[in-house]
Amino acid sequence: MVIVSKVLRQHYGGKLPLNTTKLNAQLNAMLLALRLPGGRWDAGLLLTTDKHINFLNKTHRGKDKSTDILSFPNYKVEVPGVLPAVRSESARYLGDMFLSVPYIEAYCRDNETTLDERMPILVGHGLCHLMGYDHETDEDFATMSEREDALLADYVRHLPSQYRRTKSRSNNNDI
Image (cartoon, rainbow, N blue to C red; front, top):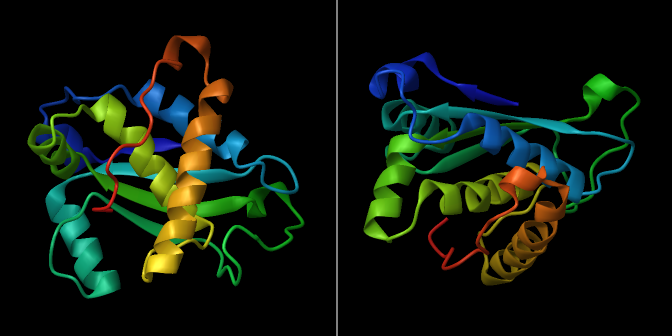
């Protein structure tokens, strides 16, 4: 589920630069495309500001800087992509992702892309982190990039038809 923080709404004067209904459809389509065991899984996606994400990054990762996305998994995953068996529907929750919309907007301006093109890439990246993938080593980066690419190629078919126009992942070395 996509949630917009109160401070982000205030930052934009109530007029967000992106379609949260579309973003929610993209998140749900990606969750389906993951083909996770045991039925439908969910994840949280909170849209926030640079200040909030900087606070989270400093508090949880020791990095005093803003970033585009932070992911907080609900489960400790030993093998990337292999989630624990869960017994109830309420336990099928991957975790939470926080995205700084102003940070992503600045990235888009600097890289001549749009929020519509960038957001699915970041959501896919965040979901991979929630499933235990990482990019600390070159090998891990290659494995995670492969999983992200497969997810981005597959999720579109799960989207409602009005949202199916999308672009594939381009230079993603910075996340």
